[in-house]
Image 1 (cartoon, rainbow, N blue to C red):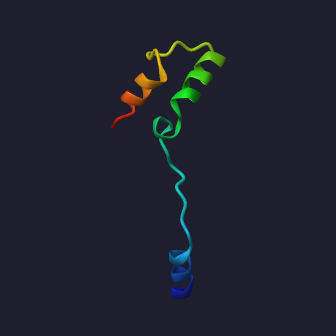
Image 2 (tube, rainbow, N blue to C red):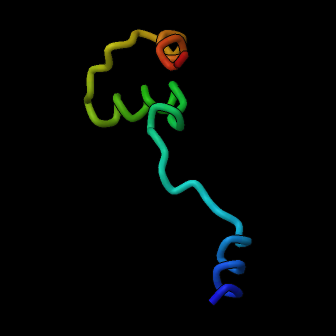
Length: 54
């Protein structure tokens, strides 16, 4: 079974978990908000970028 464990350990891995805040561009956030009639708590993409400064 060691060969199988070594094989699995050597395989490339991928990120399957992410947070939308870190992957969504501010412009897309406004596009999605407009399309879905969602009022955002930001008035500009610059404000969103500032809020994304973790």
